[in-house]
Length: 452
Ligand code: PLP
Image (cartoon, rainbow, N blue to C red; front, side, top):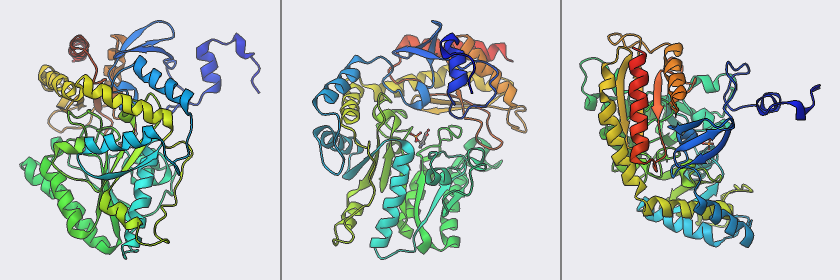
């Protein structure tokens, strides 16, 4: 029982006593930051300290904080009609689905849920049912990659390839297999990037063959691994994986939860690689996180398998909040802002500057590699440039703490990838101004210089 009256506690103490923070240790060395306000790329804590949010929250506030237009879109829609079960329809959901097809530049059927994990669970269920109804009921397994994150629910976590997020919660959903993603910085000595990427793609094909292709339902992957360390494949890898999936009747599910909505300098990350996924999952930047919403976009010919007969016509999945009218209205307005302000192009421009200005960090004694695409950057820290031994947690933690002390929030690829939690990440709001980018560059240069 709590003995101290809640009103006698400070906000920090009250937080400590009542809130269980996500993916955080029980004993925290420093008090959690309590966020109070956001404006553009900047957030202010409850004591008035300002920080540039170099991670857009959790890689999601793409248009930046404090957008009145988005608040108004939600307000107007809530007043007009706050809820519709998605067994029925409403205008914002219909208009959003049409808009997403325009962005995808193809013909998909749009299924709404609430989170990235939900969207991936829906993709797995649709893929399995599709194969059943296509006369291939034995196809139930999914292949994903080590180091990838696909969500926290039992199926999405099974697809995840980060052991530290999983091992205390197992057994998870059966039927999920993993292969190594291309990690170009750590490829075998003497091997070309192209040959190495082809080899990694062929590992997926080998897995399909060894497991018996008639058991494989799908491959799920991000266009590039984000949270697992900004691992950017050569286009040949992504194209070859699509080719392998087509060859073996396996569906290709592309997780655009982080890469979507401009982050990689294209509307969707997979558009960098010239592929056409069978299923695309989205969340985060879809509403710039102003409200929860996610999407599983399913290629039309797969959807058509659900019209064959009365028995096959149901996809027996419902969630109460998926496709909430206010969330859809916010998503539509969010896409309008991204288009009107040219934020996809801006992401590309900002990212190019960031990569150019910070490339020299590769000469830092504890930096092995600097890499990025769009407005997404990873700085891989090592103890030894020759052996490439990943940097110690304390060394990476010091960089992150010093950035924060200088007013810049940067991320790390979690404490989740066994052995490789050594990558400092940047994923700032696409709406950053040129001055914001100057600020990021100057803090990063200063902090790395001071930590030589
Ligand atoms: N997929 C990817 C690539 C993600 O990064 C995440 C979340 O970080 C998810 C799926 C799960 O999304 P959510 O946290 O909305 O369930």
